[in-house]
Each structure stands twice: as structure tokens, then as C-alpha cells.
Amino acid sequence: MSRILTDTAATALWHQLIREAEHNGAAPLDDEAESYLVFLLMRHLRDAELGGRVFALDYLEALHDAPTPREQRLRDVGDRCLLIAGLYPHQAQRRLVGLDYFLALGAQAYADIAGKASNAWAELYRRLAASFARLVRVLVEVRRLGSGIDAIGALDRHALCLADPTGAAQEFPGAIVIAGGSAMH
Image 1 (cartoon, rainbow, N blue to C red):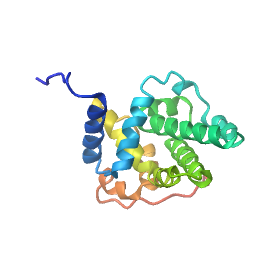
Image 2: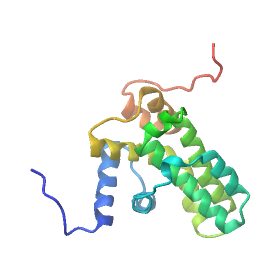
Image 3: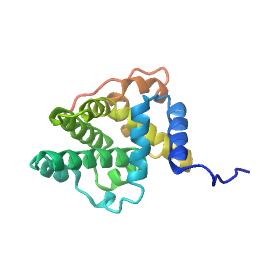
Image 4: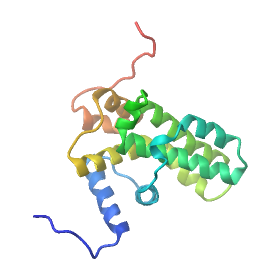
């Protein structure tokens, strides 16, 4: 029987969960990315707007803001794309978009912050954009640890492997994952 931990800080519990997900998903992160995920999960724990947002519109509106609100709004777009792709992929299915939509939009939002920021955060967001698919992979594993259910299907798993080729060996042992053409035949 598992015991309920009552004397451990929430931050430490989230951090432990992220590390376990990294290990199980064979998706190691650096310390800054781990910490970013922990605080992202804590910050958006009760995000009532998550399911009702139109991320592409939020992204376009953010691009027209003044620099400080732009960075905050782009961060929210990236964070919410990360959460939907990793923890709530059924939201993507209900919206009739694939995981690749959230992978591309979220990574681009972080890259835009990195490209326009003139502060110390630019390097962090550059790394988050580059490792966006790996962050999603960790969150997919967090969901699997919590529910015991694999929430993403084969096509979305393939999209995740294309975005993070180092994870392809974990997802499809012995297979070579290649990108297909975008044209329908």
C-alpha cells in the first residue's frame, strides 16, 4: 500500500514526478528544463482557460503586443501548447488537430521569446524551443504515470518522434522513423 506524503513540499513532489517521467520515458532534461516544467505545472494547475483557448489567435495577438506583454503572452501560448500536447492530448483530438500543431506552435512561441528578448531569459527559451518535443515526451510520461493509460495514438507518437528523433528508439525499438511527404495520394 502506498503511503500519502503530507510532509513534502509540492515543489519537491512535482520535481520527483518529473524525474521519474524523464527516466521512464528515456527523455533526460537539464536542471533548468526540469525546474521550468515543475513551475509550469504548479502555475497552470488550475488553469480554467486551458481548454477554451484558440492558441493560434493568442499567438498572433501576442505578436502585436508591446515587448513585455508579448513575452508573457507568448510564454502562455508555449506553456499551454506544452500542457495540451503532453497532458491533455484528447483536447487536441476534440479540436481535430494533430500533436504536430501544438509541437510547432509551442516551440515557435518559445523561439519568438528567445529571438526578441534582451535579457537573461533568452537562452532559456531558446533551449526550451529546441527541446519542446522532449518536454512533451516527459509530460506524456507524467500522464502515463498518473493514469496508467497511454493517451497518444500512433500518428501522434510518430509526430513526436519526428520532432525528437532521440526518442524514436524508445517509442519504436528497431525502427527507423522517417518523415513522410505532406501531399495526399
